[in-house]
Image 1 (tube, rainbow, N blue to C red):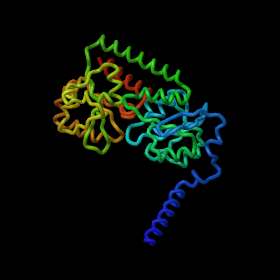
Image 2 (image 1 turned 180 degrees about the vertical axis):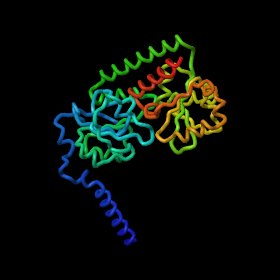
Image 3 (image 1 turned 90 degrees about the horizontal axis):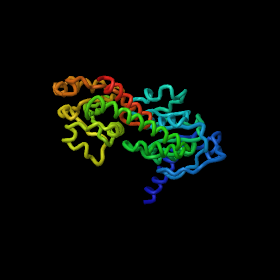
Image 4 (image 1 turned 30 degrees about the vertical axis):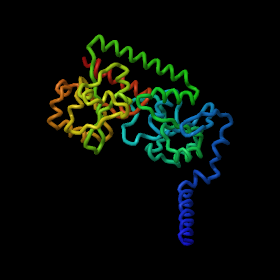
Amino acid sequence: MFRSWFNFIILMALAMLLVTGCYPKLINNSDYPKQENRISECKKVKHILGESCIPLNPQRIIVTDAEMLEMVVALNFQPVGRAKANIAGSKAPVLKGKIGEITDLGKESQPNLEKMVQLNPDLILGLGISPENYNLYSKIAPTVTFDYYHAGWKDNLRLVAQALGKTEEAEKLLSEYNDKIKSIQQKINNQQGNISISIARFYAGWNFTQFQTPLSFSGSVLKEVGFAVPQPQIQLGADKLSDGTYVTVNQERIELLDADVLFIALDPGSEKNFNRYQNNPLWQKLNVVKNRRVYTVDSGYWIFGNILSANGILDDIEKYILKSK
């Protein structure tokens, strides 16, 4: 019994040494003062993992995901560091001309901690930061995190804007977005009746696809415009889902993708998977394929996003639906 207890103590001591050894610069390096000493004035912000006192006018923001990046940029901040999406495409199309040079911290799932420390941030922002990472990031700078809401992306924008003191700017962005929707609705009503749209996402290396429901980010944007859910998806009951942002579709159920218009959101490297579907005889039977109304778009702003991505989707609607008539 004594030996077992002694062995347990030794193992725990080794584990502690390993953990602290992984982040020597982050935790033990006196060259990096504690974050509270670097901030003369701050305001308290409540979030899903607690409460943080953040600078009144942050100058060196790090964002840990692509959706936070576009919100911060839309609110006229220029982050010094950002993490990229794990699988989906980049935000480059909707960020073009809006950001300057910014340090790449790697993938969202494992950002480079050394780089984060070297950037000397005064604020770290992210969606869905884990408690473990939150504890690490908070040793670098005040950290704030919120849940990610797919269809409720406007709530995310308002939460971030409130934290950064930019509520008026956020409401202006949303007002302009609503005006854009009204303009598209009027053009569609003048051209044709109700249109059904299907959105399929293709992954790299996977042999299936998914269609996005009205609870997804892009599905919620299309719903706001007033587009109909495709009939095959209604028959499946996808329009009445109480949860779930997508439904998996294998090659035997390709008919679930049929609609008046089909948008194909491609992840990087997913072309091979998409070609498998296109080469399936069932694909050629889809009315949307026969009518040549299948359009490929970037998953970077069609699958996950916020105000800039939502506007990017509206731009694609104008490009492919309105201007194609």
